[in-house]
Length: 225
Image (tube, rainbow, N blue to C red):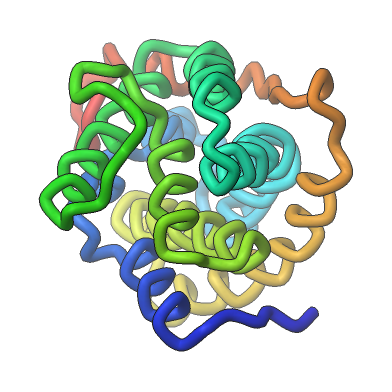
């Protein structure tokens, strides 16, 4: 698969997908910490299975389709549709913690973009999904839709593997092997996102929701709840 974009847009995409972007993604485990505490995950292969399932069944069917639609709506100035996709993104977060992850990162990215003089078509007090804020930035910087999907997917994957590196724990070599294995699933996730119908957008991973809810009461935690 060939991704074409301008050099400037590519650099902006790298900026958006960077772990150093100050949006706080590193502070959330999205259920992973509880899954490890419960003994569901004990090694690199089980981590790969856990994250791969999320990538295929959640990210590819919810976040990435919404990213594509929000990017199109932002490019075309369709503010009503953009607000509608934001509402759907927030409605699909199955626990208070998962919603907090989305809105806290969305608010942080919105603040950063405003400091960078990037206009957002939302009032500062709006509860904003991270995926929608990401789409607005990608639109402003003329980032190719497929490249934006890969950037968003990579940012999610890198944050999750970084969490697993601390929690499982994994060595740095195993973490890099894991990134190499899972990044190969991103083209398939993009194909799923491109093919899914509007009324089929959504995800349901009950065990992930349970793990996220349990994390709020976990005895000791490294990650935010």
